[in-house]
Amino acid sequence: MTSSENTGFTRRGLLGVFAATTLIAAPTMSQAFAFNRGAGDIRRIRMHSGRTGESLDMIYWIEGEYIPEALEAVNHFFRDWRNDRVHRIDTRTIDIMAASHNLLEVDEPYMLLSGYRSPETNAMLRRRSSGVARNSRHMVGQAADLRLRSRSVNQIARAAQACNAGGVGRYSRSNFTHMDCGPVRSWGG
Image (cartoon, rainbow, N blue to C red):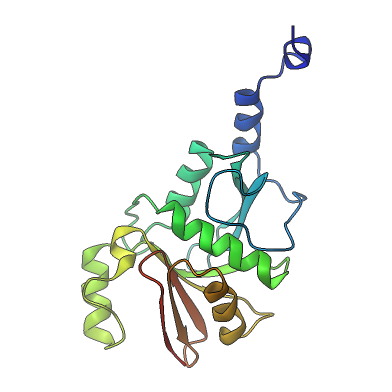
């Protein structure tokens, strides 16, 4: 009999506890993690949405496994707030965001300005601004536009670029940084 059988705890049961509970005091890593299995014990995401007033602070990956319930919560949080449509968010984008946040060594949650965008929302935004891509990665759940009060657009962008794992856009005039899990590239100023 293993020690987990003695206590009634199983690894899967512990994963469920972590997924069901928002963990405010979870430990953070001082460096970004690599994007592969076995890269660290936990991965945590902390965000706030000014559009919906919602906050998210949870561990979404533990000991080499994504927590399905946590990913469902992230998907809902990233929804298109204009029409409440939910789309699966690519875990690579979540990983880039979490790694960048760890590199910045801040406790402040990201302000999520834009996560998933429905095609209708993207088309509406394109009519208003030339800076919105026709085939935006936001429409396939692969991008996030983020801000931190305590860090500049350039600081956030440099942290994301240090991950060497996707696209990073600087939108200094609008005070946000774009992160996505597409090809490694950068733009803006």
